[in-house]
Image 1 (tube, rainbow, N blue to C red):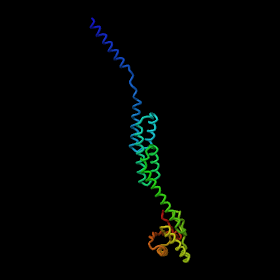
Image 2: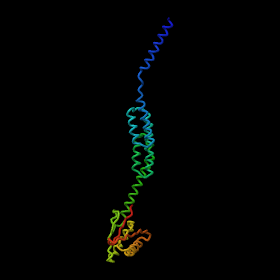
Image 3: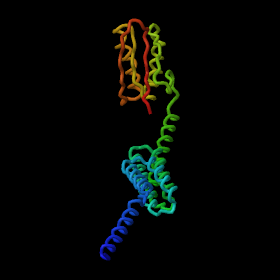
Image 4: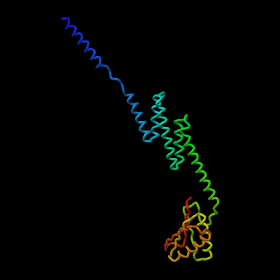
Length: 238
């Protein structure tokens, strides 16, 4: 009888233990899972060069656990990605974009000036080169004689030709030749008759060669019976 009672008590105890285990609520793993997903998303953004998105994701993680040292690793990775972007766009000649990316790298790693020193120097040199180029263009523009017939700031200038008055036409050709040489103009004669073009072109060519024998004159014609004789000068863009 006693062995039976012992087995019965053992069975009851096991049943109670099993019931207790089944009634224990499951652990809430949602917070760790969300954190892991957020870190994975941050890594994807950095690897795909979506740096502004990565910055926002990193800031959100830092807000949740500001004392977590692993954020420094991602912060440095993000800074290095911005630095690489700065180098790439600088090589393409976009100095402003390079400076913007460099400023983001500095903001992320303000205590590591050596990280951005090389690119900063390259950007400074590029800005200096841009300034020197602009100054040279300004000096060149100031050194040019004043335009006589064209508007140098316009895309092109159209000048009516007085082919009925030879003396006035010759004076016009003198002025046209000066503008063509000084402002590197391409020339298009628009005339109502085919026979008007050769002698007008010859008058201009002689004067251009006299001013600059090496000047490569680009000249064209358009025959239009509806227009009076005129010439279109298009200055070369700086």
